[in-house]
Length: 544
Image 1 (tube, one colour):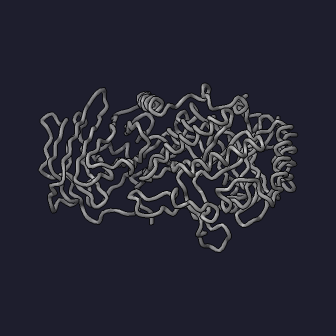
Image 2: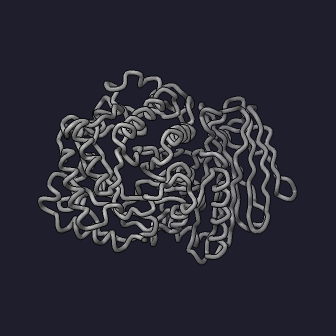
Image 3: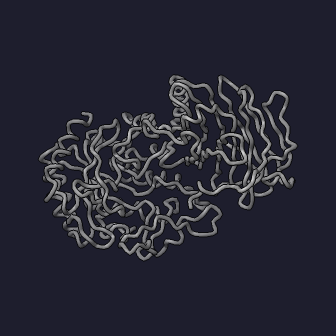
């Protein structure tokens, strides 16, 4: 059962307060520690102008028992059509999260649903009151800005946070409530939990049309650019000149976790030779998952897999690519590790937000026995020793074989590890690599606003056929390709990935998205004509 399916089985009976200048809109507040959740005491009162509230005690949820454990100050400003909440909470225990609850939002706009900039065109969350949840940073919420209603009639809710911290939007109508409740939850970083906490500004703009919603998003992204040093694609210093010509990513699958080999290094070189007949080779980026041997099983030890040809075979592949003009991008696990392969794993393993246990994540059934494998863990690049290991591993591949790029798996996922800030770890990892190899292209799985400031290229979580509602939140700064799990031509094998077989959708050109074709052992013998057609299509559609 997922967290979205859990809820209180009673009415928390929060006191609600009218929002200034917004007829019918009311707000409430809840504060959470690691041991309990609290509402404001029912005796809390607004100032006469409805702009300030001071509560000098809490109540347990349900208002059965007052709690003398701290205080809350809230200021609600109404300026230029925007309501902004400034919240400071104090509690005897360290504060885990703060929730702003909104009710009385325009019902017609709620029924039309909610959309984030990276929501697919023609689609919305929570249509006709369906319960949903968005979490930033993550696949469904790439920046903490969201709109409800149609583009011509709606409202906008956003958070101006200078740091990367979890924001959750949960919209539902519990049985005790007269109408829908929109909950915006903010989580401090676990490494910085304190008994006093100020929530970053939360903004509500009612009565938007297409022009005002666009302007609000532009203001939001201007803030994001400033606080995360997010630069436009055309002026980014971390994009080598050759990357701007890439029109196609060719995924050359190596060795599966089980040891099954999809392509030896010799076969990979032959595949590049075939591709080069149908698209200018300098416009091709070859992506190499499973080049290190048994995919994920060998993580985080990265040298050319012996079953595919070892160092000698890999060197021959790199020579062929160089002669053709194709660029090579081996894959590395940004988090993943096999505990057998990396004995100091316990020092770097991601831990839960209270630092009491290991976060056991992403344990696929690699061998088909319908049971997840037991030795796979996720490590935090914020931990210095593991980060040094990744830097040395990638540097050795660049030094010994002259590869042009490196792909870091799973770094699009965010974790609230109290020992090491994961985003700062990502930044340090990239900074150290760029100091050594200024021309090395770095790519990542997944994207969101601050991550695009660190990695100019990512794999799109959403599928190659998904258009975004407001693509500029991506395309102004970075580029994407299709995910590793996209099926290859023909039966749709996902190669080294754990998805098995997935039908490859038809190619659709989206600005900022680089098409992908994957190649496994059966692809060129059986689907050579389709691969050739994809190459020609990519060459014709990609920007020159």
